[in-house]
Image 1 (cartoon, helix red, strand yellow):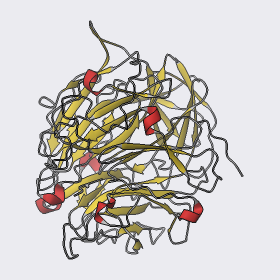
Image 2 (tube, rainbow, N blue to C red; image 1 turned 180 degrees about the vertical axis):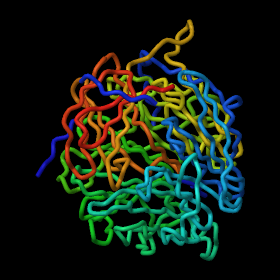
Image 3 (cartoon, rainbow, N blue to C red; image 1 turned 45 degrees about the vertical axis):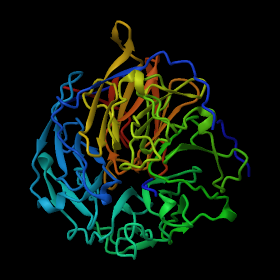
Image 4 (cartoon, one colour; image 1 turned 120 degrees about the vertical axis):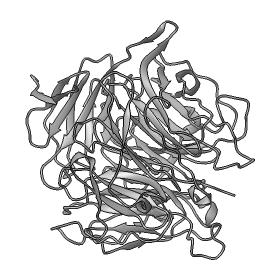
Length: 549
């Protein structure tokens, strides 16, 4: 059956109330609104760098989570050989970004060697837990009141392994009360020739009990090709998760990008050539999913050394065949060379994230950039990209105009509204440089800034297991087609986030929201006003609003 579509690493990598109802491509025309991103790194209170020897050339992530339940996003930042740190958000609505470090009652050794972190409520108690990726034993931290965390490896029967872990993703499979966890590992440090030896296999851990988190059973995902990012995705709207892994294939002669079928109650299985999966050879570093067409079929941005892939499902492929085309060149999203400065050598892309930074209802693409270390064949000055989505389906590079083109070496990042003003801000973890903190001030003009488009921020919840509705799909309609968002744990590069889902509305003053919950059930329509923080609970016929204080 045919389907109609509309269409990494080193190489030699509150108050709530009910609502009433190749060649350089030609330049494209600039969008109406380019966000002005003000650098508040020095004043934000965040004092962290990602440092260390060759094992920390990769990684450098952060986790965004609400650890004190005030709905303001806090930040946990990896440090490599330095101690990872937790920062509590003390920003006031629409004001400067302010964070305060908070000490954690953990062994300092557990907070070192951290490459990345992801938030996830593993035990369904309403508090965000943290998954720490490390060089050595990974650590699960159980979240509690007032941003307290305790080590939970023994409690949840997870031994942590002893690999060099550089990627993570999680999902709730059907019939399970607790999430399935996957860990992506880099070079096998025990193999001859390390660090230039064989890639380590990856790990999939399904919960062994429905009564409590129990991760003593490990399934190897082999072969491993030095994973630097992974993401659970429903690529064909089948309702069954698949696992995409982007790999730094340089370390394994037969390496490639991977797509794993994850059938319920059965072992994982790689999609093969016979099933349509094509061999893609890149130095894969980061991955991001976004539905650019609003048709329910996701597109994928894959960062690499030298270029960015932008993949779209072939509209002539059979519905069970994952055949993808690269549209990065035609959409002007290759990001293959620096857009500023005089260094014309190839770029090195890391974290990738789709979001709408100018609230025009079109998805934008942020890419963190930075030389692996001092690789002479790649650009030394390699500023982060801000590719703004256009109505003509092309992207416009606004990194310089927005003010994010700093001389720093980016790794992980998060695009998030940190001061509750409806504008997406940006935090970037840098190797050997201070963390970059940018506040979105609004549309840049010759006279200063002015408001951009309308917006919504949406929080989902449900009772029982999977309280934060991981795997849910949101359809937000202001016109045709709807905007699609999915709640996922994974992707980017060593960085994850939870909390409100941001949607730009452009000039629309109202929107209609429908939710496909993780069990497949669709909600009724919720009609909401623009510029609101919307709370939706499964089976509740009304939404609520949250009002920042």
